[in-house]
Image 1 (cartoon, rainbow, N blue to C red):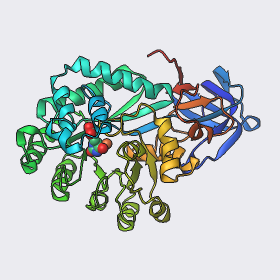
Image 2: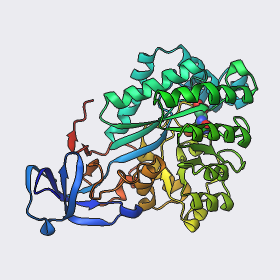
Image 3: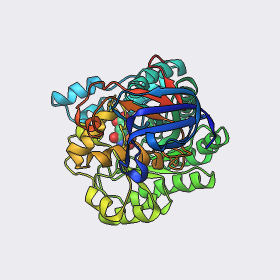
Image 4: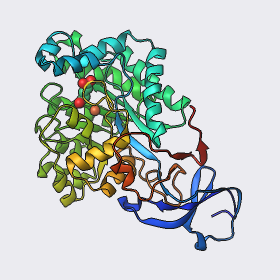
Length: 407
Ligand SMILES: O=C(O)CC[C@@H]1NC(=O)NC1=O
Ligand SMILES: [Fe+3]
């Protein structure tokens, strides 16, 4: 480590999340230089170091910056009206017949100017920033034609360029069959693979490619066509899999060394074994499970048995998970899926980093990693999971600098 550094941060317990476990350092100190962690340990182990700044917390804990590894937070309009219709007894089918569902968000997203999409997404993203999120993944998938998918991806890139948060963009053009293709999924998959993805790769508009593998969306065969095109372009893949039925999409994702398979309510032990062998992360999305009042829980016991890293994300989207809080998802992952608080916190730190392919540089308090961390004036890490909703105060250090809360 350098003998002269930018800053020291002391006075709190460091919940390092090393290897996905607390590995807490009591009365710890973090040394930061040029946006990276260059040393950490207990106060009495601190070596001779000259720091430009010394910040002393008055107790509490420090965690790695939170990572929301699965969101659809760029979209036009919202679906509150159909939310109310459903609760007044109108069926999904009737809502869809009246033009509701994903395709209504597609209409609003196509009609919205890029600035309008940017401003509404910025507001939603700021909720996440206020609760300690320092890295977020955002998907396209509501444009469903080349120009509007590119428009969405440009807005996603602009969010990362404008706000103090690291943004990873994912192309989810294979989200639903566009109305113009009414039912011909193969035709849209062909357009995605032959026209859209080459442009996205060439213009560096996405860091990964995703698809929705489900009866009402794209089959495993169509999903594999998208994966093959992504691989040929050097783009990693991830997949919405086993949300509503068991199509072995997560096993297909594992065969393509997918960064993650997401939802997984209907995943099997065989899927978990395949994911473990491929080091594919299981991203759990309790918000959608909760809002859809789903009964089938993801096979958490199998993920534990085979050592599949579990992540937890908001899935922020207007239809099935209009969730503005990642911290609430921590509680739901424990209360609804039976995760321990330690597993849930690994799910928004180290395992979320792995789901984005950045585990080597993010997700835990370790030397050499990015200096994204959060101070919480609480007694223990479980409080971050225990308190239901609300705004827990926190101080966010982003790339080594205190991030002020006005963005
Ligand atoms: O309803 C929406 O707008 C998106 C639903 C969302 N997308 C997906 O692939 N699964 C979901 O729950
Ligand atoms: Fe999703």
